[in-house]
Length: 434
Image (cartoon, rainbow, N blue to C red; front, side):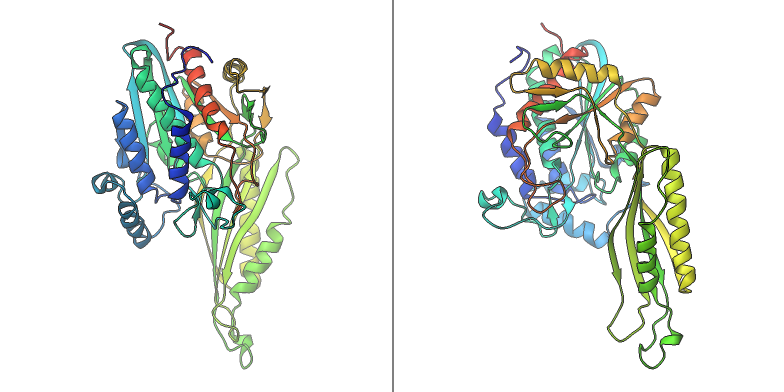
């Protein structure tokens, strides 16, 4: 192990952090307990910490209702969060940025980690390790089935090690803890608040994406897809399904026709695309023409130009379906992000660092991400400002696919992720060798 890696933060500590966040899973904009815990650890490690409205713009999309946010705040306090810290995030401003400034000149480097869980159910049977070992989510309808609990644990462990290395830190290191990555909602709001402005080097990682063997590292992802998330609401007119169906306006059928035809949109010849309808809720009763339907969907594309094409076609399909059934339609954007690619030169830094680590058994220079992640908002902001950015993959054996109820990771990947970040900080001159 390279000498600069401080071993006093043991592997079981990063595992304990990951399991704590996994047990108290909180979906986007409701990460009150998670953000409070992050703030406590960063302040204890000697970081200057900015929270809430200081690191997020007010223009946030996909916010839960005021009632949901208030209930989540109360739950966070009941689950051990400091009430004063929770108030710093009131209203769903659940972002945190910790800054450590060195005693000598050096680069400004930012590292990004996600706080949020997914909405969904977690497996409860004994075959699922979190359930068997007592760290499955205790919050109904919330589950860490993408690895963000691992990312946050990695970020806090990096913070603790940097605290021990403080005399050797040069320049400025920012640790960005982002809410609401799922649905692509938090990245744009944090980037717009300026949290990565002036950054020379940007680093981020994801566990288990295109790298499903523990010990494998992907030095840099490319083709992080641009995406647009939308909710389409159809409003028709109720009528008795037997006596006067001709008087009704069927919102359910309009939504169903839209869903079918969204899947039939012509793909673009100049790049990869995706489209998905994830949920559809409709109707009021069995014997009435349904007057209300909500369709939640997304489009993804390899470039912003292709995404514009897909979004326009999706809008045309929704409008045509509404016109066919003479119902009203409203479409809301509830999330989105542009595409991004890692800088090749910075991916080479990740590759060289990874090759020095005994726990790393294989390194791939590049891989297509083939999904969306609003890390792209930070990457683009840094790259547009003249800096460099990389998003790398930390291999982990998975119990099941991402976004499934039985998702889990090989926790050996956690320490590897920490060491790659620390190695990169040393390689770019943010930590000296003294």
